[in-house]
Length: 106
View 1 (cartoon, rainbow, N blue to C red):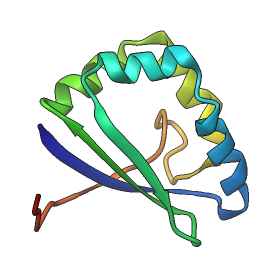
View 2 (cartoon, rainbow, N blue to C red):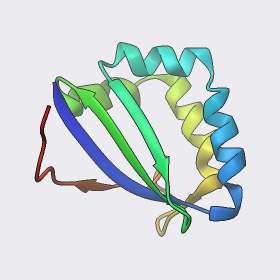
View 3 (spheres, rainbow, N blue to C red):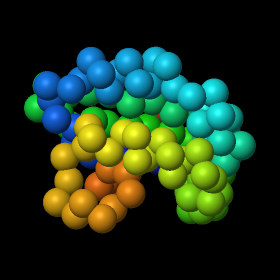
C-alpha cells in the first residue's frame, strides 16, 4: 500500500459546512472511493483553510482514474466546489498540491 498526502484550500469560514458534508457523505460516493482501492482516507483542517489529506492505495493513479469515471464523483465534486479556494475554476474538485513523503515509521 502506498501512502499519499496532499494539501488544498477551502474558505475557512465554511469549515463546519464542509465537515458536515463529509459527516453525511453520500453512501454511493463512499462506495465509489472504496471500490477505487482507496483506504485509510483522512482530511485534516488548519485554521487558514488549508486541508491536509492522507490516503493509502496500491496504485493511486489507477484509483484516481477509476474515480474520475464515476458519475457520483462528478456530482460530488460539483457539489463541493463552493467550498474550494482555487485559481483555475475549470478544475473539477480542489486544486491539490501533492506532498513528498520524507519519513515514515510503523
